[in-house]
Structures are given as C-alpha cells and as structure tokens.
Image (cartoon, rainbow, N blue to C red; front, side):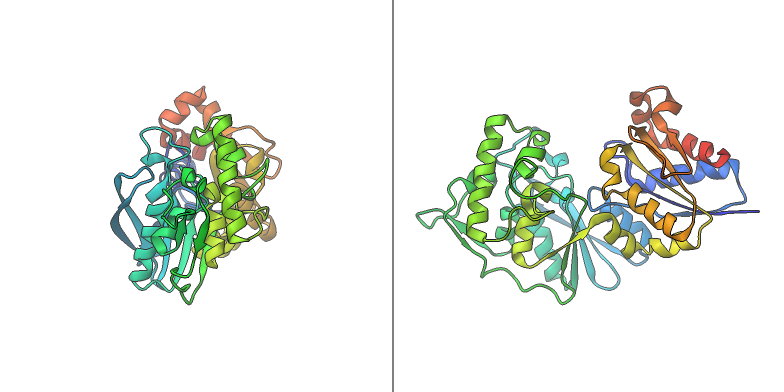
Length: 360
C-alpha cells in the first residue's frame, strides 16, 4: 500500500539548504518506493535557511531585496520575506551573518544591517514580524539593530558609541524612545538558543570563540554586555537572551517575545497537520548530536510524530548521539565513507540516505 511520507529536514549547514536536502531525500525515497506520496516540508529552527523554508512552504510569499550595512561596515545585498498575511520574516544571517565576513571581527562586527531590514519591513506595511536569529557574526547585544530602528546609545560625552561590542565599553546612556511601535501582530524572535546574555553559559563565553574571540577578548565582550544590561535593566540571565550575540536581549528590550525556533517555524508552516496525515516522517540536520535533542528541528519533528503515532526516520550528515527516538537512521558520512566526502556533495548522499531509509 502506498505511503504518504513527509520530509522535514533542517539545512545541512555549510553544505546544502533545507529545500535541497528535502528534495534529495524525497527523490532517493521515490527511487525505491515510486508509488508513495512524498510531501516536502523543509524546516528551520530560526537560524540560517529560515527564509528559504518559509518561501517554499508558503504560497504567495514575496522576497524583498535591499542593500544594508554589513557586519563590518561594507554594504551587502540581502532580502526579507513578506508572507500573504503581511507578516514579515527577517533573517539575521542574511544581513549580519558570519557569511558576510572575510575574517572574524569579534569586537567590531554588529547588527546594524539587521535593524535596517526590520525597518524596511515595517515601512513596507508589515503587520507582524518573525525575526530569525542564527548565523550571527557579532556580540553587540543587538545594539546595532536597535540603533538602526531609532534607539540612541551614547558615551559620557553624549556622543553615539561606535558599532560593535567594542562600543559597549564606552556606553553610558541608552534612549529607546525613538524605537517604532511594535506592529499589531507583535514581534516574535525565532531561535533555538536558550543561553542567557551573561555568565559562563552566556553569549560571549559560549559563542565568542566561534566568532574568533580570544580569551582576553571574551572578558572584554562580557564587560560590554554587562554595561548594556545595567542600563537596559532587563534580566540578563533569562533563557534565550544570549541568542545571536545578545541580539535576543536587545530585541526583548524593544518588546519582542521569544518563541522556540523550530516549533514557531513548524506552526507557521503547518507541519503538525502534515505529520498527522502522514504514514512516515523523515527529518534531519548536518550533525545530529546531544544538542539536537534540545530544541532543534529533529527533536521537534520527532515529538510531533510521537504525538501522532507516526514513525519518524533520521538522516544526518553525521550521527554523534543515540537515535533511539527514531525508527531508522542513515548517516551521510557512513554512506559516503567519510565526513569530507559527504559534505562535498550532500545532496547526492542525501539521495542515497533517502533510498536507504525507504528500504529500511
């Protein structure tokens, strides 16, 4: 009897987008079970690929292009998405992400361009905002984005501080009165990060090294974020405030709310309904490890499938954690022979994984 198979992977970061992986898995499955109905539902957790996931899943979405100030002061071409209900999706990685750096700039990278894209969406009449935080290159506490939206951050002399975490070292005054009113549908932050702004699990300590920061720079970055927290007065140890170098913290000061990235994206894409009507579900990501079980796409999809009594299968570039929540799994690295080969042509090996899972 033919099955209905929903394929809902995250992107394989650095290798292939979620739509590309979903398509390859689907084609691989169909090569073994050609009579099955395959439904592609590429996912995201609020990080890179969120725009692509929404664009493919929501008919009538319009991608709006613009030029913004990149994370190190060089203009970059970016885009955001207007959904048919006039909710705008803005992805930080598009405007201020690591991909826009020629070299790390842990103290000087900023989120000003992200704020410019948010402002453009509001100017275009967005009635609500979904802000995807992922792929961040900076640790500026979201100050750059807030400045682009109309906030003012100044030093003891009343002069604007420089953009980036380095500027937080001279921060003395914060004025948020110039920020625009929240749109009627509110502002939701999409992120799978639960780290706080400050401390040993905070934005600087945990994510600073990934952005090229030395131990000495991490101390400086933490001090700058502490100055920001003292001025804004929000709880810096709240879960999620450390997302995207503290951008989550800054946006909360504007009035945004935090939403678990994978769940918020899944709800917006109608994934719960798709899973309920399926006979099997495939999910996956580039590396399945212990963090995957704490809010990332595979864990979210597995929970949906379990609730609906539908078997769920896993395809991942590498599998480094137990897969007991899945009926079957396929590692692209094992199929290819080694991780490097799998990463060099992820769609090819995703096709092979789809076929292997269909046989399983």
